[in-house]
Length: 506
Image 1 (tube, rainbow, N blue to C red):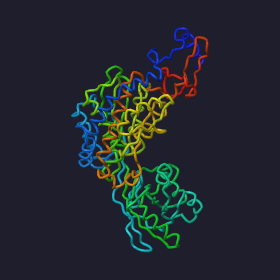
Image 2 (cartoon, rainbow, N blue to C red):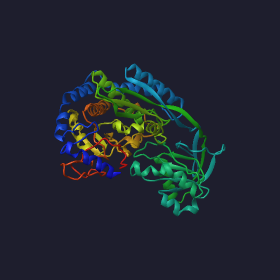
Image 3 (tube, rainbow, N blue to C red):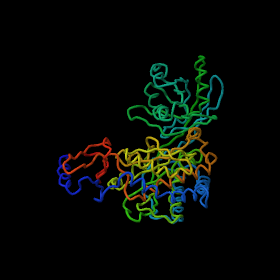
Image 4 (tube, helix red, strand yellow):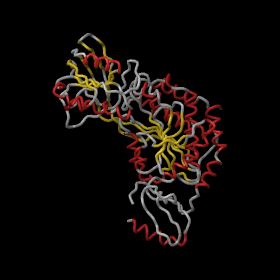
């Protein structure tokens, strides 16, 4: 295949010698041209910041979120609350006079925790706060009463496998980071079942606790028995660990009424500002509308969803219409593994070359410091220039790697991606717990996040050229007599993008 490209471009060399190509056969700008183009957005960026932070739109994303969260409450996949939330947002986006407001159907998991409680019976009576983990099976109707074995790691569990049979495994794993420690929540039941345990209780994946269990999704394996599993507070896990270390026998009674139902109908919620020049090209901003069934889902991910809505509102309020379409997607069933996002990807991936950038905010809307970015070296340089427009609010950093379950499908295939980078030092205090309420949110910080989200998405949507993709930077032409180089990656400083698919399939 690469030789076909070679022959094709060799024929173009005399015509385009020393010039850079783009998908519409015009010439790509030099980086100096791009810097000057971005600098031309200084006044627009200032107008967005002034409107979001100081003007009539001040605190609007917070106030909208407060009404939504207080009215709807938590929004678990498959629940009536999630249905109500989608209907609410569909109407709200229409009332905001956004364009192409519509719903895209998705089938989502439907799990309910039911009645649940745990009681320590030995060495004393003590009520243990629990939250069943997503997809957990129920206990028998009479519950499970069993002795506890406390371990700090999977390695310790397997070393003590003979002791674990017929017991309830309590994991008292130390919190290192969410990414590393979450394996105990997702795989704890499977590993406990492998050694014959009858249930598992996992220390909440939290960096701080006030006796608050934190829930989340967990995964069974078809070839391993499915046992009930729940999270417990950090305090109870540590207490049982101390008791166990002293040789004290611990007995717990656990009862869980969890049920899994057939998948339910749901929707991704979509709205747009249609582009004026390249309407088929998309800049996507997003957050997920679903949440867990505790707290209000205000932080995870009400804030991200509502600053994404706010980005379109601010642009509309200023009478701006970017060259490309700015598309808002509010995902469904993110907490169950990005179910809505996967469906969206399957429906729209045939147009992947028209996706300029995908952006998701799903790690809180606290004080922002910049953006996480995944993309080519040249695209990163452009993003750094765009972020200089946010100097008035001192939010200019570009960090390695965007993060977002819902945009990973696109980034995997080479589409540039961005995520909000903010102060998450307290994020896991409240994550997936009863503490995720509007009290966590700060209107001034949300204003700043909305300003960042809006400036970045608008400028990318309005620039003359799309961001270079990660996979196609390595196409460059030097002189009529030089060799054509086609490769993946970004090894050449002269590498330029030609309009090829972004999946690195050369």
